[in-house]
Image (cartoon, rainbow, N blue to C red; front, side):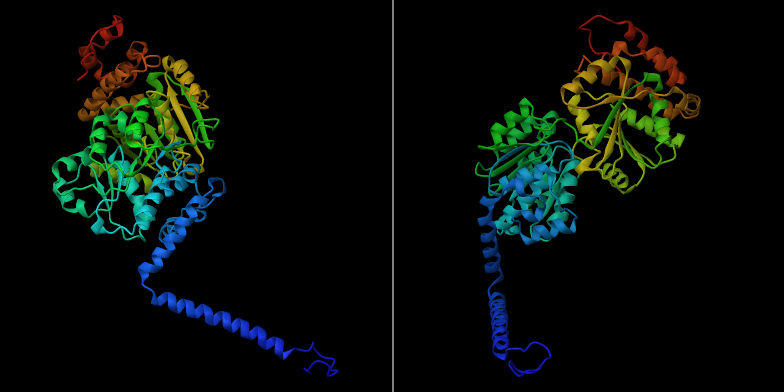
Length: 533
């Protein structure tokens, strides 16, 4: 290739001067970059980290929730982002979009959102970032306190925290009932992030001499309405009185009751209100298909068996009113062998057993879980296809929490509510008032499998099962009798004679001794509650 003007007819001539200048610029940039990298490596790691924290904090005021689509759109530390990515969390939900930015800015937050909306990450991420900004260590003690209503929900929060926060150096602990108090006491003063239930926490505050919360930076109350519904109002007041006033507080609740607002006034300072579902057309996820059927009391077991037989490849949760119902029908369906694994979860089980059942159900691709309302709040069961409410929920709030076990994180799901003729009118009206879209479907009697003869044979052969049947029947009567929602529940409208004959024919003599027939004829208001023990 000739120089410019050599008359050659080949390729375009190359100017060596310009070529050298380009090479020189490229070399200079590369040399400068390497020099900066060497300088960066020579600086102490803590200094580099502090400068990175400073850059993140400068971005907090510019957070615009409307522009956030992914977690990477938030100014988060590399350690948190890496944990989110490894746990397969990428896209944010509405409660996360609205809450995380406010929490990063240090504001108190009172949040309300539908179940399954992703509240857990909405408070775990700000908690991790707060301790990261402060360069918190085990020597600094307790920095974040997360209070949950139940052991199962606390355990679930702990699992999410371990996944997302595994790249941080903070220590995390789970303090719940059913564990050894002395063993917890020996480790509790080393914990930076503590997840607990209210009763257990107050017990440690009273009995563990070296449990300190004087340097607490953030208090998180998850499912606050449930905490108060379970009778922990006085416990929460006592806990909050022992915490430092100068702290950040995040309070989350699926429903906003008077007691929740009272707790918010006590624990929050100038909070930001986040009502994710207030503008929504419905109180339940749009991806949830909701229906109800009207079924006679004596046909409910036939209906459930027929349903499970036609949904063998589905994952289903069935809610019952009492532990004794779950215990009895679990045994019955294990004997009936509907064609898929049957599991049971209720409050009478030991903590270890409940955790074992929860883990087993999560791992199954197709199974049915018989449960009380212990499974209705906060627990995350992945890929649940159906939620069946075998017994009518106490109110619309309970209904919403039960169906929240499916259609989580924008996935699809289906819910079926089983109502007695006496419950239909009032319950449907209450659901409509709470913006719950529920449609009636009719039962085809020809498709119901009658299991009464098999059931009676089981009862005749198994004395223990017969006793469980007796307790189940009485427990169901008691639960209906004690329901506060008298517009829906009236024990005197139940067709107990038919139910007794169809389901518990073997033990009808025992029921007569219980004088259920007299109970049916009793119409006098103000009578004492019958003794069903």
